[in-house]
Image: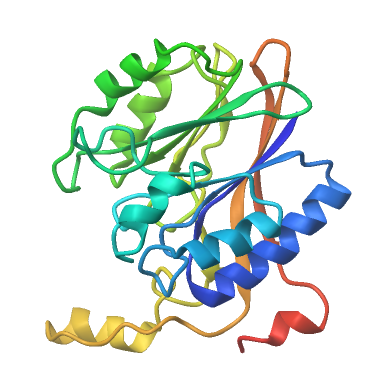
Length: 266
């Protein structure tokens, strides 16, 4: 089973390249399942249910979120209705939504779960204890996919090693910068510290460079608008044995637009 993970989709340029590349990779690479981090889809501030429906129509199976999940207030109620959108499982008890979803596929059920880190992040429950508890729940698929939304590379690396042999893949999101440390770990779990950003790469993690530079140089606040330019999809493609849940291969993905549409955001 070929599974595509897509890094943080940022603004309308990210949404544009997502739709094109997902269709292309389903057609040309045999991708059969797609997991996308969508917490920056609405102009860098969360996601709306309308945008989520656009993602699903484009071939996305599950949308993961992160620390911006509540930026669009409608999601407090919408995330209860749309189970294919998940938020970190180690949010406080009683928080709206779920941190895990199992989706039926022709190759069998696939479980997608998300956790959020604690280093350089707002306080949350322990992701290590949370994942231990979640993995004890009945009805999980043999294929288990984890999005770890965290800042510190050390925390991500340790979390990945902690889950080696217990899940099919652990991929990091949040920093918007793709790392080059993809690895198939000894227990058969694929790992990548950060998928990267799906959006305009000639930017400051998706924002126009000039106001961000001004803030760093002067210390004064500025409005950080979405960057314009050619968008690129960053992510990872994993090949998983549907019978065992073990990963066979992981490949980093960096795919841009093709055809006339690729100049739309210049």
